[in-house]
Image 1: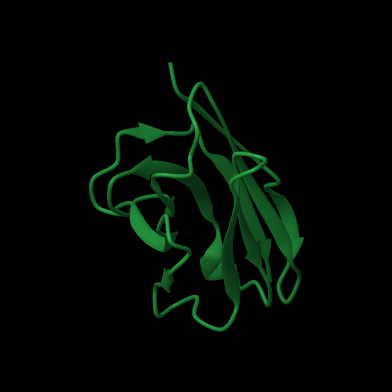
Image 2: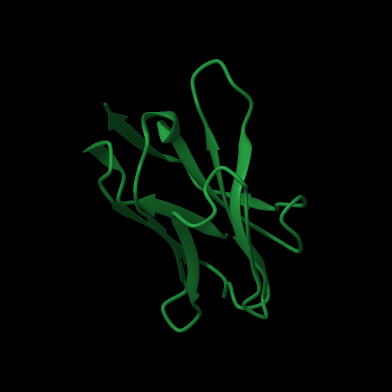
Length: 117
């Protein structure tokens, strides 16, 4: 059974940085597209970034230039480096895995990111 476990969330001041990790177990992530989504209170879950099996990355316009997604297949882990954080980045961040960024077979439990102004 595949498990995804996110970590690295927390409380940070605006302008600060956090690095989220998503560790997979039960199967290799190397063949999957790995995605980070987020959901703020009262809002729909939205795509933040994704990286396909070949390493190609894509970002939501709201995080371009500030966030960076990366994958380490040897460690079966995907990361989200978040810099220049803004209060509007406050959300629960979820890691997902699947054949594409919009077809996700597996989700993590989420990690809370709170950015104070």
